[in-house]
View 1 (cartoon, helix red, strand yellow):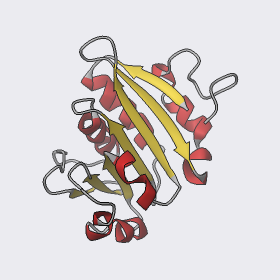
View 2 (tube, helix red, strand yellow):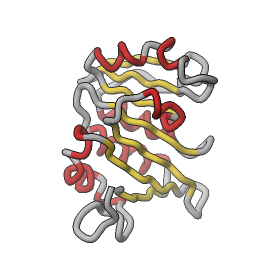
View 3 (cartoon, helix red, strand yellow):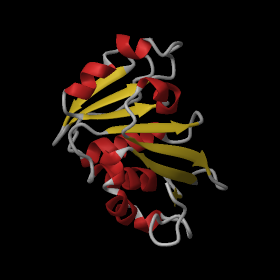
Length: 171
């Protein structure tokens, strides 16, 4: 696990952009955290780094929004799903086959319905109003293979002992 912190929405977007620079077609990124923790701000920074020019908003009521950039970005919000079976109804299996990047807000709620190959980003509130703590956990081979690059990309935000390098907590 890589642990990082930001102190403003702009920094959260910059951290997300650094992660997005490592994104590849077929990647799955899960965002987890309480309401207001910064999942949508993260999605906005992530999308901008992929070259998305239109406004990125939370798809809470539509469940899914698609954006075009250097990679196709499918942004899902599964907060309102009541059953895991509804993951199939929103077409997640098909989206995984289309070769874009899938970013799922509240993604931890549907882990049992997903392939075991994703990057989970848990966002927690920090001490100050705009402070956020990020726990980035690669699961499976796709993101685990980029673990060092991920640690380097978010290095300026990494908290002591959470760099993912030598002596850091294992994934």
